[in-house]
Length: 217
Image (cartoon, rainbow, N blue to C red; front, side, top):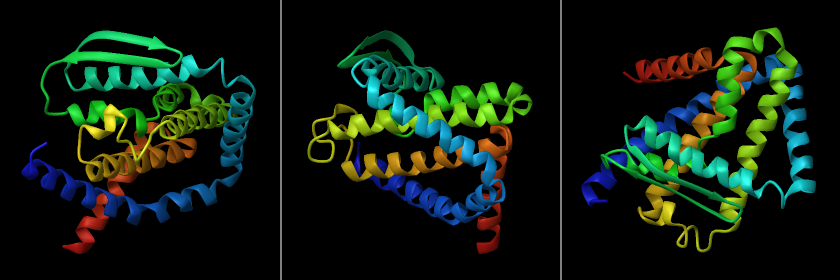
């Protein structure tokens, strides 16, 4: 990554982070106003943590699959050709070819993109209104699984990711700024989707961004 590219990206990430932090209170208002539904969300998360406690060795394959599938999905979304997907309990790999313009998103996505939670939210867009509480439990479990995946990823890292190819191929300041920014953004989307559907969640976030920008200018 060139110095110019690093400075531009880092500046954009800082602006994005500021907008996110200024939006947190609005998301918390939604959570507080519908706290009973979020109890089901927390129940789903708690169940997943309990399940992981007793099936840790057996679900390592699923965690690797979650990690590598996220690489693969973002590769496809950024119009890269996926050449290979390999998933094993202790390791995995994805090979892709194409433009390098969005390669940062491909590399860092598993640490900030809750893939299974997005699958649940897309499903919930069509059916969630018919089974609100069950949907909240399943979404909580899916999001907790994402947290367990990144916990395992970061526990295995040494010296803030210097032994993790996904992270150390870029300046660490950029990598961790990117991960924090998009993890916070996706977490807000998940939380809002407990009360709203995924489309409404995105519109709510970006409407708040627009109001913040307009208030400044």
